[in-house]
Length: 94
Image (cartoon, rainbow, N blue to C red; front, side, top):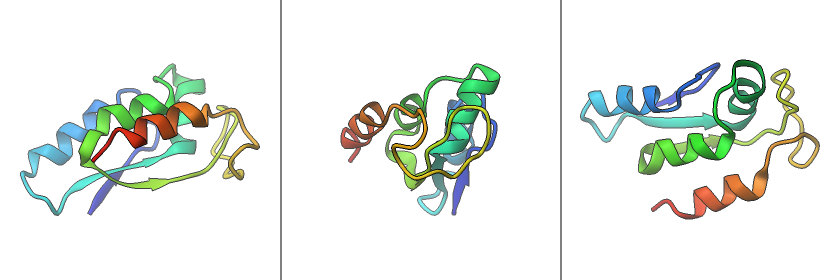
């Protein structure tokens, strides 16, 4: 089971929740569009910070681009997510 972000301002909260179960059956998911929306609308950190915060608790990624104003579900490259930073952060995970 993975716990997905919606309008999370602090990406560490979901990681702490997943850790609290002390089970490999509970992990974290990142919806890149939701994270970018939270960054643009609520002042949350950029998407790559969600990846870094999740670390190896990250077991699922919903890739979608957005403009930071709504949950757009655009194809990658159509919005304003900094994909190089996101994929660089993902590359560091085991």
